[in-house]
Length: 494
Image (cartoon, one colour):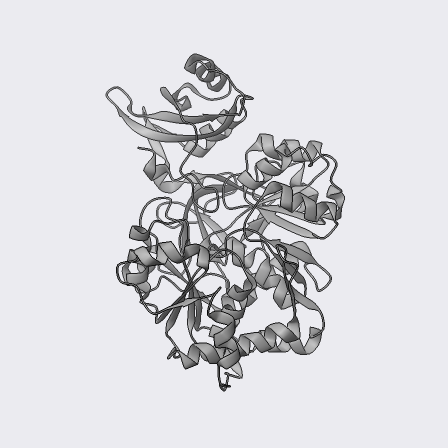
């Protein structure tokens, strides 16, 4: 096992110093690898000058910007731990995360100033728009670490909380390197490639799919403050994106944009999708547009790249999330932890160097997340087919029993999403005096759709599902509460 890593930014700057590392698309401002290397050293010195020591947490609350990566590498150089915070959260929720992480410093953008002012137990703050450049310039030199201990914590990412309270997932330096290898093996990511960082950087996909791997590879990261379909399509029209990763809601917005059909889509060499289940109909629309949209599955806890469909299989095996990537191992087991044969549904487990060692200051949650032989419990039910492809059936805790039969909400949701009038759907179990439990479907209709009788949806499902799987009731919603990755927060529906 690797014990120490070289300073990966310093190594990349030595190899690719004159190449552009970061570009902020809003202003066109760029940083070469040599410049990013110098500014990360100044960020380390600035943090040390503010009293930040090895092991201390540094929180950051802002929209996407180049300074995020300067602080990420600056923390690495002094052994501090970066804690990205979700700017979509209200102050009440953020207060609990700040209290849990106990940061020595909170860096924030001017756009989050009002939110910071609402925090009850606010740590010392640093305004990235008003004070950061001045403090960088004034910081005295500090001796940076020559190596990064592979197993040490680099940053913490709080989970999206689809079922309740977020937990702080530990990210080590070794995890970041393993994810880089998984991404590179799956996509061919290299120094000539350009990727767009538009997913929020408080989310693992924002950092790791594919911004940080691109920086390790020597590529160019186009930093966007956030996602806007027109702005992303303009970058594609300008032939400036080679690899693209997004969540299903982003791919929906892209294909619905009037400029989608005329864009030079073939310029993008690899299209990846994850974060939430990709509806079959959406994948089929991309196939009709000539795009091999590769669906995958991972977790904040897996680094995140775990399973990914290959482009060769993307059109013929729609619905699958692919195979385990190079440094990821996967198993499907029954309730007793015994391996199941191909075709059987069981819990999906992961192992490998990209898997987190656990949760920050939460030994109980860490113990619960792993089996006795150190495999990570995903909480997902899945099956593997004879070709080694994995198919997710839904969350283990969401499965319910109706009249003695197992019902997987994800299967029902997939059928509902195939209805031409349905944009998205979520199915929950509700008590039933006769059957024990039955399904209740929450349905978001596609834009421009008029009223849809529940009887029509029931008949649509009945033609495609066994009777016990058909929802007993339907509720129509304008939109769903979602995480930053686009996952529906089912615990908020009830």
